[in-house]
Every structure is written in C-alpha cells, then in structure tokens.
Amino acid sequence: MNSKTILKKVWVVVLSGICLTGFYISGAEGAKVIRVATQTPPESLIDQGMEKWKSLMEERSGGKLNVKVLGRAIMGSEREVLEGCRMGTLDAGIISAGMLGNIIPQFFIVAMPYLFNNHDEANAFLDGPVGQKLFKMLEGKDLVSSGYATYAFRGVWNNKGPITKPDDLKGLKIRTLENPLDLSIMTHMGGIAVPLAWSETVIGLRQGLIDGISVTYGLGYQYKLYEHTKYVTQTKHFYEPAILVINKKLFNTFSPEEQKIIKETAAEAQLWGRREQMQFDEKAQSLLEGKGMKVNSLSPEAFSAFRERTKIVYEQFRLRIGSEFMDEALAFVNSLRKK
Image: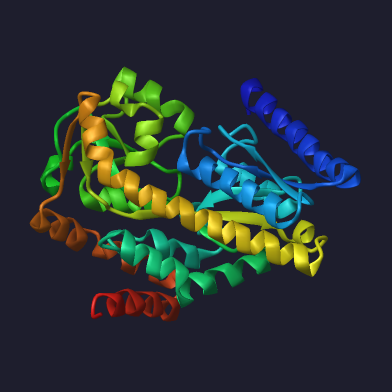
C-alpha cells in the first residue's frame, strides 16, 4: 500500500469520526442530523434528491430532523461508504445496486443487461414487490432503506465513433465499474472492459489508455465528459438505481414517529429524483449536441442484438442471485409488458 493510499484512508477515517460525532452534537443541541455521503456533485439529481429529502424531513418533523449532504466522494469511494454505513462510522450513503450486489447478490438483478426497455418499467419494478423484497434483505446487513434514486440508463461515450451495432465495440477499451457484473456486461456486448476508479477515468481518456466509458447521460453531462469524448450512444445496456442506505443501529435510535418520517420523506424525495431524471434523459440529446457531441440511439434491431449477446450474463449470475429470485424478477418484468 503506497503513502497516497494510506493518507486517503486516514482522511476518510477522520472525516467519518467527525460525521458520527456531529450527529450526537446536533442531537444534543436540538435537531438530529443524518449525514448522507454521495459520490456526485451538488448539481447532480442524486444530491438534489438528498436536498429534497432534507427539506421534506425538516418540514414534517417541525425542525427536529435534518439532513447534511456530503457529496463529491468526500467520504471515500462507494465501497468505503458502504463499509462505513454497515460499521456505523457513517450515518448514511447512496450506493449503486451493483455495489450492493457484492454483499447481497440479489441486488445484481436490478442492474442486469437489458432488463428494462424504459423508465416506466424500471420504476414499476423498483416500487413493486421485488424492489420492496430487496429492501428487507438490507436489514440482515445492518442497513435500512426506503426508496430508490437512480443514475438511469447507461450509454457508451467514446472517441472512436458512434455505436450502431455490437461490432462497433470490437477492440474498444471501455471503462466500467469495478464490479463483476459491469465487467461481464461490457465484455459480452463486444467491448474490452477496463475497470477503473472514477478519479483515473479522465486521465485515461486524455492519455488514450481507454477509448471510452460506460456511464449515464446525467453523470456524463454533469462531469463534462463532452470535453473528453466525441461520441455518445444511448445503448441503455443496463439501468443503474441508487439506493439510500442508513446504518440500522443509528436508525433504531429514532422514535417510531421519527422513523416513519425518515422513511416516508426519503421515499418521496427519491421518487421525485427519478421523475426528474426521466425528464433530463428526454432532453439530454439536444443538450449534448449543443456541446458539440455526436449523439445517437440504438435501432430496435441493434437493441435486440445487444440484448441477445448479453443473455449469457443472466446464466452466469443465476446461481449467485438465486434461481427462484431471478425467475420471480423476470416474471414480474414480463407481466409489465402484457398490460
């Protein structure tokens, strides 16, 4: 472990201590403050959703409950935030389904390739019985939650050309998340999956170490990837929800009335964020074209081709997720398309 890594871990521990201490100080003075760590900047809909949670919770608790957003990964990587929330050194955090899948494999189902056709299907799934069953699984890992935010559908940003079919990804080095599901999806789509920390991604693009990145319209726009890439294709290869997790021990220190307010306002705020993200995705193409990017979506034929190529990922993860749970989830999605 090099000195830079050691210093980073020390800094995260110090900040975590400040975060935990701050909760009890605030509680002694009046309002109880839940500090929630995110990986995103203030202008992101993730952080805006947390600010919405703050305003709703302040209002409905009469100022007795509050939220403090700690954005821009100040509390460490997503993995470090998840560990901190489970240990109780952090109050709460926003964690992607893929990362939660490392401790609760059933969460991988939400980010499986081409599971959803659109936002409506994704929202119905998250708010339905399967999504609620996933919430209950969190409690066995010292966490609680009540609502889903979203990063939305992932696309491919790159400097080589538009993606119109699987062959267009051949030979392209695409940055993915550092989890086995994302790696497998990109590999079977036809690209060369390169797991990189976000902090190394822009440097990798500049130096040509990677050709592109798998990321959503929203995050790509907020992080100004249009300054580093020329093309973006809305491949929609998987939908990436973001789950608010709260340390269970901390949550249990609140009264039943306070717990009800926390859960209800969190769910409402995150639903608001998902709806806002839907609207952003509808106007994203014109925004990105205004920045000089070449933007395209997949034809129905190409979408089907990518879906066919990635079916093997479901078999790879079937035992890990659990056959019964996977079949239940897929049956629910199919039921949505019969209505």
